[in-house]
Image 1 (tube, rainbow, N blue to C red):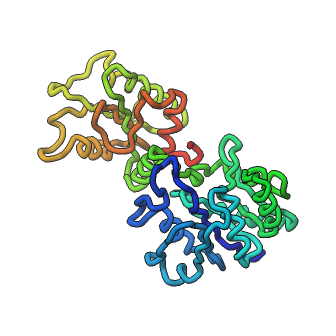
Image 2: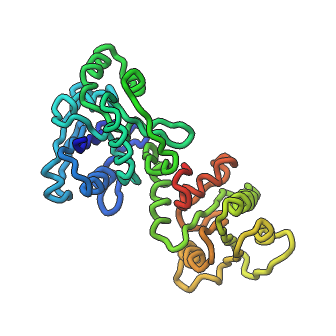
Length: 336
């Protein structure tokens, strides 16, 4: 089949972020520009940007900027359908890969499977990625421009739900559960911090997660020990570092470090005030120590210190801690 066009939807109001999320700093640029830069490795004959504000593509390579057109919604405030309507009305491609602008990890690798599905079944109007737990990803999917009449009818009827559009169309689904992390999107400030944490770990020799809590006795050690046990059972080598304010460090039976060792941590360390070189912050000292561990990932327990990313165990459901660690460390892409 002919290579599809690319449509990026950036017309949302970012209400949960309280600022324009597409302009959030990311990789020396912003989320939107970074996504466009990632697209340059693929021969999209047309790149459409659905956006209701100005966008200056000056940071894009000339050949990428040349294929980019910005299109404003004809029906503002009606969600993704309004972006599809405006783009499909002005576009020239038979089909488009439609992406939301807030996908920091999307690398376009699913495109081949989506195109293959559309090529094998020419009657299809949509191909939707389906990730972990059967979640549809309609804003990382292929749509044919032949859907335009139905889109317009739904806009006129006030039926703005994208799910209803593809549910009533000739639609196929592609299993993307093995790489669900590609579809992580940034809707809230916490999502942004989570994305930054995973991105930081992707550049570290050993990925790190700090388990924190606002005060002692909040369950940090219990969360760490439980996670070490589960992660070890999954085949990961987990190291444990305990940040402490004590100046005299010694191991004792039943201590936090003893519990971590009993949970099969491959290495266990205490990090006190004098374990960091002069002029080095506690966060930098803990990070340096973590990179020396013979492990697949390191869990740091600290009440107020520790390198990013961090999980506040008092604000995270216990059953989600392990999967959150896996996502933040990048050890298993399907864990979101």
